Length: 509
Image 1 (cartoon, rainbow, N blue to C red):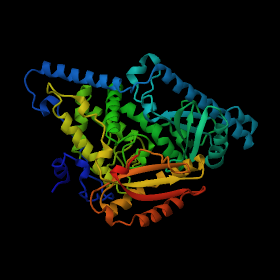
Image 2: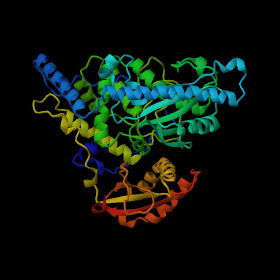
Image 3: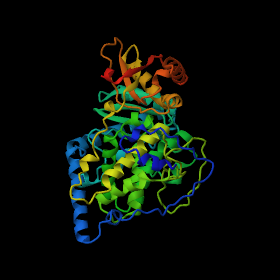
């Protein structure tokens, strides 16, 4: 029986679907249907007759979406936006001073000293929604008041990541009164520093270009700046390059940004998109939702906001995964083989045309798929008089959905050690999910962080939902030993404590 058909029959509680989807042979190029189209909502839902009335209802639905975005506080104030801009401005100044310090440390010839420079480039939600003019601020925004800032530090050829970035720049930042909670994540696929700057959370990876002088707004598509750069720098640059390419490819930037804002709110409410924790657990990151939203906007350039939001669910609820989602940019797609199983491949819209990094596993694939199906079910009657968007944005009632949970208790001797230890363990969460899948068939990883107030040491606790059957049959102690070994293999600091246990729903905080 077809997987999609199975899931549509179980929409009452779609997260309790444990069917195994056969793996796609990654070595073969899929049969792409790039001309896949979804008709206008009126035609899809069978609303014939007065087209003026249909258009009027579409406009009303679109206005309702804008009102919901405002009611949810998704648009930060102008003061908050200025605070973000000032933080980026100060970071740029710090990076320029850091480059000068490093250039003296490396005894750069005097004739080069005056030209040595670095810069900061923003990407992610903030980079997709920053207008150059503040009078366009509310029209263009994608990020909200709680969003962090993804900022790329671009340095010259002589500034190394190991010493100059993770030691010299880290120490400079740590000495600043505006900076707090700084942590280096060296073992990640894209190594970065994570910290707060005047209360704003910032992720700062590093790209090293083979030049001495870097313009403030360097062209990340110019081959001159990209020649012979290392693999880590390529990966770090991919976020900025993808952001800028998406904005080039969509037919209407403002409509795209409005669609993306709505998609992000839905995904966050339903627990399939959010902060860095959710991405580590295998759910959507910002770039995934940006490409999916741009894909819809490309194929329906004149559709209204409400129509595009409906089409988003209509398209991806029944998308033939693992067929990749690829934006059309007039370039033939060069297939890049990978040995990793890709459940939901979404291609970055810039060379070398790799897939967006994803930790998606079987469990998170089913969760995302079921939420897309739920979204389609709730939006297919978009033109009916009693339609209400609030049903779509209802938060997922996680604590009431499961009877048993795996409790993940992490602790260390002090807060600084705990931050480093938790960061390492989170980077290995995918291994734990896969192990629980092998034993139980399914796991619903909740990214919410709790604190055990009864414990004497600084700690963080996670609770992941488990299927009702078979939990009494697993040896959770054996799982704990294997997972702890996996974390210790990549952790270089003082090892913290890790304890796994099975708890009942009434034991949740």
